Image 1 (cartoon, rainbow, N blue to C red):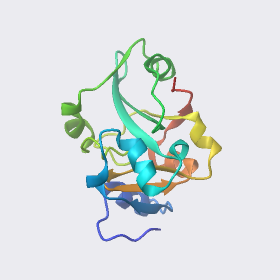
Image 2 (tube, one colour):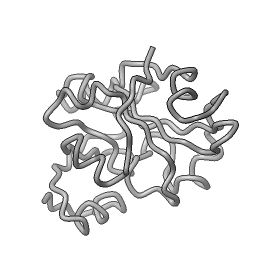
Image 3 (cartoon, rainbow, N blue to C red):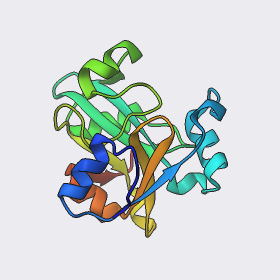
Image 4 (cartoon, rainbow, N blue to C red):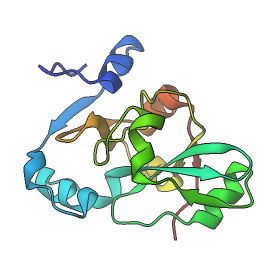
Length: 161
């Protein structure tokens, strides 16, 4: 397991579950408007293994979480279909902290305030390891898709355009 000075809530949960991961730090001040792609560039990782975490609300199920490659766009109709909703809308950024415990740019699918249904784009399963936010701007965790599933109870589905 990775040892780091500032351990995030997501890392604490991974440590407690004895899930191996690598912490990948980057200079958060260097990240511009397109967070995910910039983080991939700064860390030297390909975009297809770097996943961004998005939070939405379904008309039937309420809050749901989607993780998609940083250079991809979530397809809200596909997300609605796999989550049992007729309609899904992204939540407003003002709601992020209250719902997840994380701020914009640092939302991790691991360790949110509540266990929301989580859907990760199925391309994640094509890789040995993927990166998701560690729960703060400036740090990601690299772990296997199976370990992410163990930590979040996520489902792998086709949810991108």
